[in-house]
Image 1 (cartoon, rainbow, N blue to C red):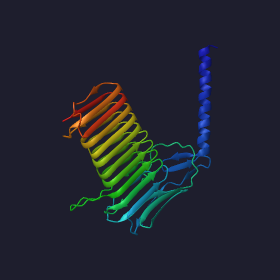
Image 2: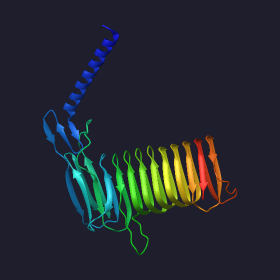
Image 3: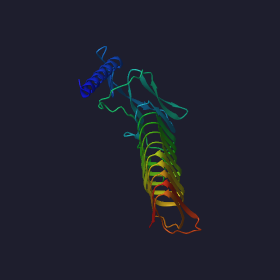
Image 4: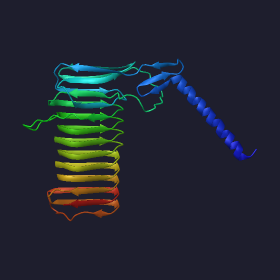
Length: 322
Protein backbone atom coordinates (compact mmCIF):
# COMPACT_ATOMS: atom_id res chain seq x y z
CA UNK A 1 0.00 0.00 0.00
CA UNK A 2 1.38 3.38 -0.97
CA UNK A 3 2.10 6.13 1.58
CA UNK A 4 -0.56 8.38 0.04
CA UNK A 5 -3.26 5.73 0.47
CA UNK A 6 -2.20 5.16 4.07
CA UNK A 7 -2.42 8.92 4.73
CA UNK A 8 -5.93 9.04 3.24
CA UNK A 9 -7.07 6.10 5.39
CA UNK A 10 -5.62 7.63 8.58
CA UNK A 11 -7.23 11.01 7.81
CA UNK A 12 -10.59 9.33 7.17
CA UNK A 13 -10.40 7.53 10.51
CA UNK A 14 -9.74 10.82 12.33
CA UNK A 15 -12.68 12.47 10.56
CA UNK A 16 -15.04 9.63 11.51
CA UNK A 17 -13.86 9.72 15.13
CA UNK A 18 -14.36 13.49 15.21
CA UNK A 19 -17.92 13.20 13.88
CA UNK A 20 -18.75 10.54 16.50
CA UNK A 21 -17.36 12.69 19.33
CA UNK A 22 -19.29 15.75 18.10
CA UNK A 23 -22.54 13.74 17.90
CA UNK A 24 -22.08 12.34 21.41
CA UNK A 25 -21.38 15.84 22.75
CA UNK A 26 -24.56 17.20 21.20
CA UNK A 27 -26.56 14.22 22.46
CA UNK A 28 -25.33 14.76 26.02
CA UNK A 29 -25.52 18.56 26.17
CA UNK A 30 -28.52 19.11 23.96
CA UNK A 31 -29.02 21.10 20.79
CA UNK A 32 -29.39 24.80 21.53
CA UNK A 33 -31.15 27.47 19.51
CA UNK A 34 -30.93 31.23 20.27
CA UNK A 35 -34.27 31.10 22.10
CA UNK A 36 -34.85 27.40 22.71
CA UNK A 37 -33.14 24.01 22.97
CA UNK A 38 -33.66 20.36 22.17
CA UNK A 39 -32.62 17.59 24.57
CA UNK A 40 -31.57 14.83 22.19
CA UNK A 41 -31.30 12.18 24.91
CA UNK A 42 -34.82 12.83 26.15
CA UNK A 43 -36.07 13.77 22.67
CA UNK A 44 -37.99 16.74 24.04
CA UNK A 45 -37.96 20.47 23.42
CA UNK A 46 -36.83 22.67 26.26
CA UNK A 47 -38.87 25.83 27.06
CA UNK A 48 -38.48 28.88 24.85
CA UNK A 49 -38.13 32.42 26.10
CA UNK A 50 -41.33 34.05 27.32
CA UNK A 51 -41.82 37.76 26.73
CA UNK A 52 -42.91 39.79 29.74
CA UNK A 53 -43.76 43.45 30.29
CA UNK A 54 -43.57 45.18 33.67
CA UNK A 55 -44.97 48.65 34.31
CA UNK A 56 -42.89 50.88 36.60
CA UNK A 57 -45.39 52.95 38.58
CA UNK A 58 -43.12 54.30 41.35
CA UNK A 59 -41.21 57.54 40.77
CA UNK A 60 -37.45 57.33 40.20
CA UNK A 61 -34.63 59.70 39.27
CA UNK A 62 -31.88 57.19 38.44
CA UNK A 63 -31.57 53.93 36.52
CA UNK A 64 -29.24 50.98 37.24
CA UNK A 65 -29.48 48.06 34.81
CA UNK A 66 -27.41 44.87 34.84
CA UNK A 67 -28.24 42.42 32.08
CA UNK A 68 -27.59 38.68 31.88
CA UNK A 69 -24.37 37.55 30.19
CA UNK A 70 -25.77 37.26 26.66
CA UNK A 71 -28.63 39.75 26.87
CA UNK A 72 -28.71 42.84 24.66
CA UNK A 73 -30.04 45.97 26.35
CA UNK A 74 -31.78 48.94 24.70
CA UNK A 75 -32.75 52.25 26.32
CA UNK A 76 -35.29 54.31 24.39
CA UNK A 77 -38.11 56.81 24.74
CA UNK A 78 -41.47 55.56 25.91
CA UNK A 79 -44.14 55.51 23.23
CA UNK A 80 -46.99 56.21 25.68
CA UNK A 81 -45.48 58.49 28.34
CA UNK A 82 -45.09 55.74 30.96
CA UNK A 83 -42.08 53.79 32.22
CA UNK A 84 -42.00 50.09 31.43
CA UNK A 85 -39.58 47.25 30.64
CA UNK A 86 -39.92 44.42 28.14
CA UNK A 87 -37.77 41.35 28.80
CA UNK A 88 -37.66 37.58 28.34
CA UNK A 89 -37.64 34.80 30.94
CA UNK A 90 -36.99 31.10 30.55
CA UNK A 91 -36.29 28.14 32.84
CA UNK A 92 -33.46 29.12 35.19
CA UNK A 93 -33.37 32.70 33.91
CA UNK A 94 -35.52 35.31 35.64
CA UNK A 95 -35.48 39.10 35.64
CA UNK A 96 -36.48 41.47 38.43
CA UNK A 97 -37.34 45.18 38.30
CA UNK A 98 -38.02 47.41 41.29
CA UNK A 99 -37.62 50.97 42.52
CA UNK A 100 -35.51 51.38 45.67
CA UNK A 101 -34.71 54.80 47.16
CA UNK A 102 -35.57 56.56 43.92
CA UNK A 103 -33.46 54.21 41.75
CA UNK A 104 -34.95 51.90 39.15
CA UNK A 105 -32.96 48.65 39.32
CA UNK A 106 -33.17 45.79 36.85
CA UNK A 107 -31.36 42.54 37.59
CA UNK A 108 -31.14 39.13 35.99
CA UNK A 109 -30.78 35.90 37.96
CA UNK A 110 -29.25 33.15 35.83
CA UNK A 111 -29.32 29.68 37.41
CA UNK A 112 -29.02 27.76 34.17
CA UNK A 113 -26.33 25.12 33.67
CA UNK A 114 -24.31 26.33 30.73
CA UNK A 115 -23.00 23.82 28.20
CA UNK A 116 -21.26 24.21 24.86
CA UNK A 117 -23.99 25.09 22.38
CA UNK A 118 -24.58 25.08 18.66
CA UNK A 119 -26.60 28.03 17.38
CA UNK A 120 -28.31 28.11 14.01
CA UNK A 121 -28.46 31.91 14.15
CA UNK A 122 -32.23 32.32 14.03
CA UNK A 123 -34.97 32.87 16.56
CA UNK A 124 -36.84 35.77 18.10
CA UNK A 125 -35.13 38.89 19.37
CA UNK A 126 -34.72 38.65 23.16
CA UNK A 127 -33.38 42.15 23.77
CA UNK A 128 -34.30 43.76 27.08
CA UNK A 129 -35.89 47.13 26.23
CA UNK A 130 -36.27 49.87 28.85
CA UNK A 131 -38.83 52.52 27.89
CA UNK A 132 -38.36 55.81 29.74
CA UNK A 133 -40.82 58.68 30.09
CA UNK A 134 -39.50 62.03 28.92
CA UNK A 135 -37.58 63.68 31.79
CA UNK A 136 -34.05 64.41 32.98
CA UNK A 137 -32.52 61.69 35.16
CA UNK A 138 -29.70 62.03 37.68
CA UNK A 139 -27.85 58.98 36.37
CA UNK A 140 -28.27 56.11 33.93
CA UNK A 141 -26.00 53.07 34.29
CA UNK A 142 -26.12 49.96 32.11
CA UNK A 143 -23.83 46.94 32.50
CA UNK A 144 -23.89 43.68 30.56
CA UNK A 145 -21.22 40.97 30.42
CA UNK A 146 -21.71 39.81 26.84
CA UNK A 147 -24.36 41.79 25.06
CA UNK A 148 -24.83 44.90 22.96
CA UNK A 149 -26.07 48.17 24.42
CA UNK A 150 -28.20 50.56 22.35
CA UNK A 151 -28.77 53.92 24.03
CA UNK A 152 -31.45 55.75 22.05
CA UNK A 153 -33.13 57.77 24.80
CA UNK A 154 -33.36 61.50 24.08
CA UNK A 155 -34.83 64.20 26.33
CA UNK A 156 -35.23 67.57 24.63
CA UNK A 157 -37.35 70.68 25.04
CA UNK A 158 -37.84 73.74 22.88
CA UNK A 159 -37.43 76.18 25.76
CA UNK A 160 -33.98 75.36 27.16
CA UNK A 161 -31.09 72.91 26.87
CA UNK A 162 -31.59 69.85 29.06
CA UNK A 163 -29.79 66.62 29.88
CA UNK A 164 -30.88 63.05 29.25
CA UNK A 165 -28.97 62.37 32.47
CA UNK A 166 -26.34 64.18 34.50
CA UNK A 167 -24.18 61.05 34.55
CA UNK A 168 -24.36 58.15 32.11
CA UNK A 169 -22.26 54.97 32.26
CA UNK A 170 -22.43 52.12 29.74
CA UNK A 171 -20.25 49.01 30.11
CA UNK A 172 -19.99 45.63 28.40
CA UNK A 173 -17.19 43.07 28.30
CA UNK A 174 -18.02 41.57 24.93
CA UNK A 175 -20.51 43.58 22.94
CA UNK A 176 -20.98 46.72 20.87
CA UNK A 177 -22.28 50.00 22.26
CA UNK A 178 -24.32 52.34 20.08
CA UNK A 179 -25.48 55.77 21.28
CA UNK A 180 -27.53 58.39 19.46
CA UNK A 181 -28.91 61.83 20.41
CA UNK A 182 -27.57 62.06 23.95
CA UNK A 183 -27.06 65.05 26.24
CA UNK A 184 -25.33 64.54 29.58
CA UNK A 185 -22.93 66.13 32.00
CA UNK A 186 -20.55 63.15 31.85
CA UNK A 187 -20.55 59.99 29.73
CA UNK A 188 -18.30 57.00 30.40
CA UNK A 189 -18.34 54.06 27.98
CA UNK A 190 -16.25 50.89 28.33
CA UNK A 191 -16.11 47.69 26.30
CA UNK A 192 -13.45 44.99 26.43
CA UNK A 193 -14.19 43.39 23.08
CA UNK A 194 -16.57 45.47 21.00
CA UNK A 195 -17.05 48.69 19.08
CA UNK A 196 -18.30 52.05 20.33
CA UNK A 197 -20.30 54.41 18.12
CA UNK A 198 -21.82 57.75 19.12
CA UNK A 199 -23.71 60.22 16.94
CA UNK A 200 -25.12 63.60 17.97
CA UNK A 201 -23.80 63.89 21.52
CA UNK A 202 -23.40 66.88 23.84
CA UNK A 203 -21.53 66.60 27.16
CA UNK A 204 -20.99 69.54 29.50
CA UNK A 205 -18.00 68.14 31.38
CA UNK A 206 -16.41 65.00 29.94
CA UNK A 207 -16.68 62.23 27.36
CA UNK A 208 -14.52 59.18 28.20
CA UNK A 209 -14.39 56.11 25.94
CA UNK A 210 -12.47 52.85 26.43
CA UNK A 211 -12.38 50.04 23.84
CA UNK A 212 -9.72 47.42 24.61
CA UNK A 213 -10.27 45.49 21.40
CA UNK A 214 -12.63 47.44 19.20
CA UNK A 215 -13.13 50.55 17.13
CA UNK A 216 -14.42 53.97 18.20
CA UNK A 217 -16.59 55.94 15.75
CA UNK A 218 -17.92 59.41 16.53
CA UNK A 219 -19.97 61.99 14.66
CA UNK A 220 -21.10 65.46 15.71
CA UNK A 221 -19.82 65.53 19.29
CA UNK A 222 -19.51 68.55 21.63
CA UNK A 223 -17.86 68.35 25.04
CA UNK A 224 -15.46 70.16 27.35
CA UNK A 225 -12.98 67.29 27.73
CA UNK A 226 -12.66 64.22 25.52
CA UNK A 227 -10.57 61.10 26.18
CA UNK A 228 -10.49 58.10 23.83
CA UNK A 229 -8.54 54.88 24.44
CA UNK A 230 -8.32 51.69 22.41
CA UNK A 231 -5.71 48.92 22.52
CA UNK A 232 -6.46 47.23 19.22
CA UNK A 233 -8.74 49.27 17.00
CA UNK A 234 -9.05 52.52 15.11
CA UNK A 235 -10.52 55.85 16.20
CA UNK A 236 -12.62 57.76 13.67
CA UNK A 237 -14.25 61.08 14.57
CA UNK A 238 -15.93 63.77 12.48
CA UNK A 239 -17.17 67.18 13.60
CA UNK A 240 -15.89 66.94 17.15
CA UNK A 241 -15.54 69.90 19.53
CA UNK A 242 -13.66 69.65 22.83
CA UNK A 243 -13.54 73.13 24.31
CA UNK A 244 -10.73 72.43 26.79
CA UNK A 245 -8.83 69.29 25.76
CA UNK A 246 -8.94 66.29 23.46
CA UNK A 247 -6.73 63.22 23.84
CA UNK A 248 -6.73 59.94 21.97
CA UNK A 249 -4.48 56.91 22.33
CA UNK A 250 -4.34 53.62 20.48
CA UNK A 251 -1.75 50.85 20.66
CA UNK A 252 -2.50 49.22 17.33
CA UNK A 253 -4.75 51.18 15.01
CA UNK A 254 -5.17 54.35 12.98
CA UNK A 255 -6.60 57.64 14.22
CA UNK A 256 -8.61 59.78 11.80
CA UNK A 257 -10.28 62.91 13.17
CA UNK A 258 -12.01 66.04 11.96
CA UNK A 259 -11.79 68.51 14.87
CA UNK A 260 -13.91 71.64 14.92
CA UNK A 261 -12.34 73.14 18.05
CA UNK A 262 -10.06 72.19 20.95
CA UNK A 263 -7.62 74.23 23.05
CA UNK A 264 -5.22 71.33 23.61
CA UNK A 265 -4.88 68.24 21.41
CA UNK A 266 -2.83 65.15 22.31
CA UNK A 267 -2.88 62.19 19.92
CA UNK A 268 -0.65 59.10 20.15
CA UNK A 269 -0.42 55.69 18.51
CA UNK A 270 2.13 52.92 18.89
CA UNK A 271 1.49 51.34 15.51
CA UNK A 272 -0.78 53.32 13.22
CA UNK A 273 -1.25 56.40 11.05
CA UNK A 274 -2.62 59.67 12.42
CA UNK A 275 -4.70 61.93 10.18
CA UNK A 276 -6.15 65.19 11.56
CA UNK A 277 -8.26 67.87 9.90
CA UNK A 278 -8.57 71.04 11.99
CA UNK A 279 -11.42 73.42 11.24
CA UNK A 280 -10.47 75.65 14.17
CA UNK A 281 -9.05 79.14 13.58
CA UNK A 282 -6.73 78.77 16.60
CA UNK A 283 -3.00 79.18 15.98
CA UNK A 284 -1.51 75.94 17.28
CA UNK A 285 1.99 75.03 18.30
CA UNK A 286 2.36 71.77 16.38
CA UNK A 287 4.54 68.99 17.78
CA UNK A 288 4.86 65.80 15.73
CA UNK A 289 7.09 62.76 16.12
CA UNK A 290 7.30 59.38 14.40
CA UNK A 291 10.15 56.87 14.45
CA UNK A 292 9.09 55.15 11.24
CA UNK A 293 6.90 57.18 8.92
CA UNK A 294 6.31 60.48 7.10
CA UNK A 295 5.28 63.78 8.71
CA UNK A 296 3.16 66.44 6.98
CA UNK A 297 2.00 69.26 9.29
CA UNK A 298 1.40 73.05 9.10
CA UNK A 299 4.04 75.49 10.34
CA UNK A 300 1.94 76.74 13.24
CA UNK A 301 2.96 79.20 15.96
CA UNK A 302 5.90 78.27 18.18
CA UNK A 303 4.74 80.12 21.29
CA UNK A 304 0.99 79.70 21.02
CA UNK A 305 -1.19 78.96 24.05
CA UNK A 306 -2.87 76.28 21.92
CA UNK A 307 -0.94 73.04 21.45
CA UNK A 308 -1.40 70.08 19.13
CA UNK A 309 0.91 67.19 19.98
CA UNK A 310 0.94 64.08 17.77
CA UNK A 311 3.19 61.03 18.01
CA UNK A 312 3.35 57.50 16.62
CA UNK A 313 6.09 54.89 16.83
CA UNK A 314 5.36 53.30 13.46
CA UNK A 315 3.13 55.27 11.13
CA UNK A 316 2.57 58.45 9.12
CA UNK A 317 1.35 61.78 10.52
CA UNK A 318 -0.74 64.21 8.51
CA UNK A 319 -2.36 67.40 9.83
CA UNK A 320 -4.40 69.87 7.77
CA UNK A 321 -5.81 73.18 9.03
CA UNK A 322 -8.38 75.11 7.03
